[in-house]
Image (cartoon, rainbow, N blue to C red; front, side, top):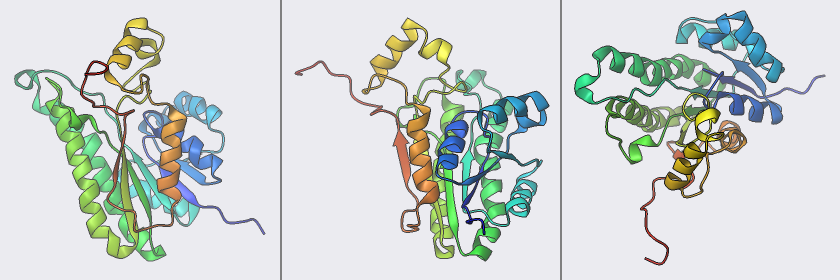
Length: 253
């Protein structure tokens, strides 16, 4: 008889913390289900699946459809990684549009809210589970012109705390990994921040560790939060930012 495997669902799997989450969970012998709107394009899915051959595609339109399809496919889900990303709109608030705000909130707040809401009764019926939300710690040091992404990320982190309180009695743990300065093509692309000297110098000036976070590093953390049996660990928002932000002082000062 084949040994049963834990099952994880990774949303928006194509970028940000999605690929490292898929890799880390597969290495931990999870059965990994993935969803991403871009996978409706056959070439996009072929490209992703060639690098992640064990990933199983889930096709769905709404959060309710996604969660239902995932449970129908696997019979149970032990962990959901809600990997939410959207291009950070940076412009002074008087120049930003309400549509910019609406679109950002839809992707970073409303979407994950819908996934957790849809998943809760399934987790409840099976006796519990882990939810890992990938948010951001960018609100530690607000930037000029960053009101829209700052507001959305702050709201997502607030959701984690509220979900944790509500779902703890159901044995459902809700935690977040909150990156900044993580290498991803979504936010810190290689051509600008790794291959370019000016970009590397900028990272060194901002991040105490002196470099971008690596995908395998965040993958380790996601794997732990997705697989731990400690439901007492809930409501945590773990900064993943190489020590950023830190006061800039001269050595010896």
